[in-house]
Length: 92
Image 1 (cartoon, rainbow, N blue to C red):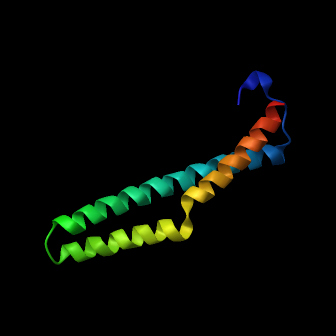
Image 2: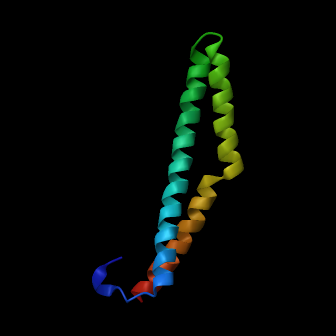
């Protein structure tokens, strides 16, 4: 937010704004970190010999399972939308 256009926000709204920003950063980090970890695990599972290939195959499956179950990208979009709504309301 630009400081010259910013109204004085109530502390509750300001806290909520900060928490939404923190949460969307966490979920986007989870999305990319687990996705990249799953990608590297699947590459290693297909390129190395036993018994480690099975370990990396399980790790890749777990990463894909986490992304499918938690759906961090959808959570990220929810918090970004909420943060932007509060942010735009503060500027007006």
